[in-house]
Image 1: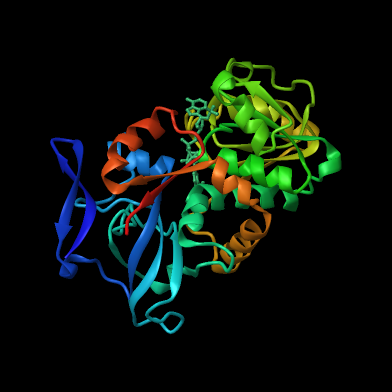
Image 2: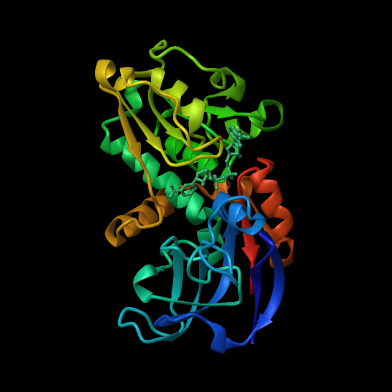
Amino acid sequence: MFNALVLEQHEKQTLAKITSLDDDLLPDGNVTVNVDFSSLNYKDGLAITGKGKIVRQFPMVPGIDFAGTVADSQHPDYQRGDKVVLTGWGVGESHWGGMAEKARVNGDWLVPLPEGLTAQQAMMVGTAGFTAMLCVQALVDGGVKPEDGSVLVTGASGGVGSVAVTLLHALGYRVSAVTGRLEANQAWLKQLGADDVLPRESFSAPGRPLDKQQWAGAIDTVGSQMLANVLSQIQYGGTVAACGLAGGFDLPATVMPFILRNVRLQGVDSVSCPKAQRQAAWQSLTKLLPASYFEQACHTIALVQTPAYADKIIGGEIKGRVVIDIA
Ligand code: NDP
């Protein structure tokens, strides 16, 4: 038997409850993992509260990422006792996820726990931090260099945003962080590495198709009007990495930044990211994140607290990353 957070649906309402389950109920897969830590991402918040169509079938164990120890393996790359990490691949959406003492998955979805990180630290990074690294890489691949000017990060107090600020600073970029919680989080964002912190309101109203060129690049976790306004302020030849929709999934933009300023809009997906790119991203994260990040930007909760925190993440009330201690 093992304990899991289980989502059920009754009369179109999603209900979340900690339940003791028999091992026989674990889904198909060739690796069984004793989960040590999971984490809370925006997508988990949407799944647990039912506010987004994330879960494909019920009952579902949520948790789009986890770190743990292999209990049993029929996969050639993994043996009992190996430390592993999983993010994405539809886990916690269409396949039972990490908010449980045990998970059974396809071994191809796992990566070895990167050397230099504990399981808890790997989940302090989690899907959000991993995605932030993919966004930073997208800017580098787009040719954005520290000497080109400032890089803007939207939704900066959130999981993706806070890791993006930390990573960009570590790579020598000048970072401008956008937040809706200026007063509460300004000092903290500067500690993480932001050079300046800007209020969300200055990007909220519909702007001009082409505005003053201010940013060499941007990482956007918000979408909608925010992304449209960011695009209109990108310098000639700059790149925007777009990964999120915390402000909405629409994009009320024009083609002007693309056709007159050679701006590149690079989408970033972490779920189906190929294995080689995954491992490279984890290696970069291990190298770049300072020890202070784990102390300043993360806190740990118990599984039983997760539904309450799911409401908070959807309400935009979480600062940094939330790790779930499962073991
Ligand atoms: P968080 O909730 O931790 O962070 C989102 C942040 O966005 C908030 O902290 C807040 O920051 C800001 N925000 C919230 N609501 C609004 C709003 N209505 N308008 C403007 N800003 C808002 O979420 P995550 O960091 O986990 O995820 C961020 C986004 O990235 C989500 O949309 C998520 O789905 C997406 N994502 C995508 C992935 C991919 O593979 N493409 C992977 C991981 C995440 P502040 O208070 O500082 O303004």
